[in-house]
Length: 133
Image (cartoon, rainbow, N blue to C red; front, side, top):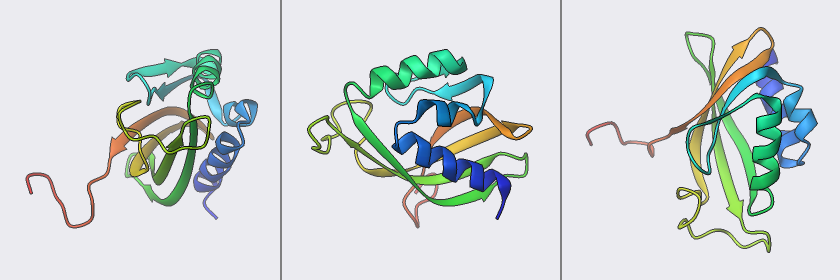
């Protein structure tokens, strides 16, 4: 199995288990991580720890990778289904958190050596749609 895909699968497993240290071990110390709640990026391990700790006090996200694509520049795009629930287990209606309802999105990972250095979120168009359609 591809080592980068294996690393990302482990990263998603640890994120869904709320194991911050398990995720951070796969990231560079100065990682830039997309802030899906407020926009922009969170930087570094302690910034990411604070971001996730605060996030998990208001929502219960679950992310499942359903495919991976290697980019020519060495980045890896993970196609994921994200489910965001409130703390009572109810799916959010999309009004909160920049429309973070169940949906398929792209997670783009850039690497330095064997660690993730940058994470970005990209919209994925439904099958059959192209820009301008």
